[in-house]
Image 1 (cartoon, rainbow, N blue to C red):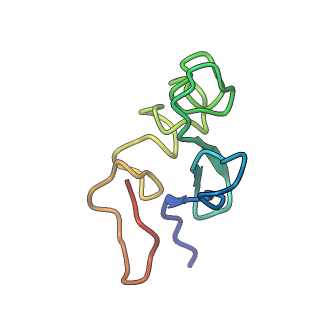
Image 2: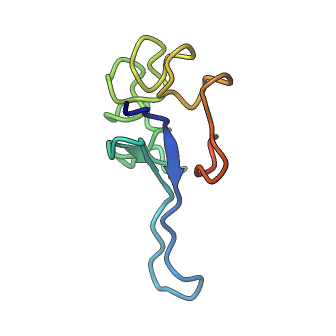
Image 3: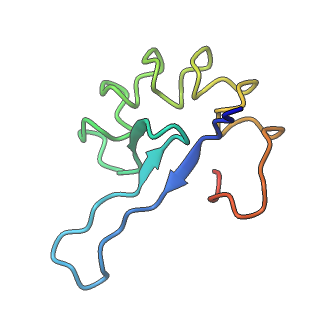
Length: 93
């Protein structure tokens, strides 16, 4: 039985790197769900309302209340406070 729990994978470069990537949101099944860039013009940012990952109608958006990753009743959603979390699982937001 494969349980999918949405997780956050933080992918930051070294503090001394010239360019630093925004933290990414990756689902347990490996699906990229966007990044946490505060740049509202970044097409991959969950804060860009017009981008694919910030648009509340996109199936892969954490803001889509009817989608797999945004529905608070879905076990794959980070918004579900009752989703099963085991010791050793990555941090949820």
